Length: 118
Image (cartoon, rainbow, N blue to C red):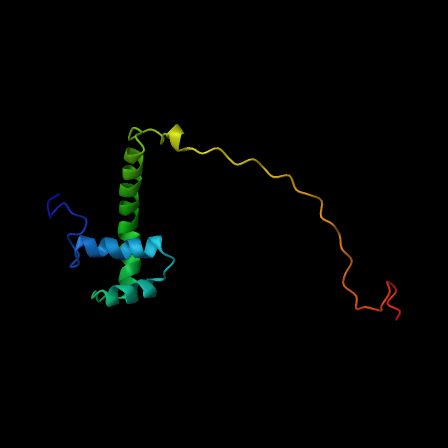
């Protein structure tokens, strides 16, 4: 892909940095400010608003690439549904039958009968 065709051509940051920031935000339960702090620890100085803009702009593009890789990794055609390898599917374990619960009386101190008389 030539530089003029790249969706990153208007940005000063490298595509790897943009992808790292977007994936941190999407894959981990982090706020844009948390992603900003993590990026700063790695030497990337940016604002949390930049994180939000990059997620809105590049998130769908990265998601479609991941979906395409998943479909091809499963061995299905690009336009069809994903096939499942039967050797990888495990049967469900047998269900346990529940035993009726024994209802125990509430605890009373010694010397107190069921009518609370001493």
